[in-house]
Length: 147
Image (cartoon, rainbow, N blue to C red; front, side, top):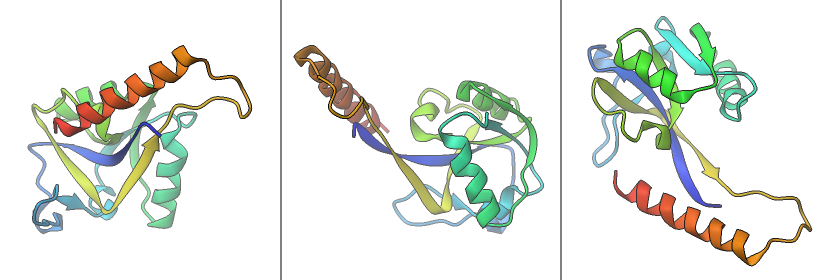
């Protein structure tokens, strides 16, 4: 494992969710998935790692998202959010550098995943590869502390 990150809702700053926002001291405000049910949304493509997780989440919570389109590029989602066209769900690391015009919310039941370096079981991991993994872990741990 390199680091653990939260999956976030990204919405235009101008969108008003009224009393649906859940405020918790010392934490990012949260939104129930239901708050997005009638809002246009862009999600990552079905073949991405995140999309099956989101599809299951929507099914479990009985929310049918109003998907404008899907994309392979999470930055596209944030540019469309910034343009006040839609909302989206992205990994916390994707939010780095996309602050202007966007509000980020946790899900009402926060969702996290681990980002990991992976390789085939039993394969040889060279010293250089292990150093690279260690540097990547250090980089991401420092990057996530900046927030």
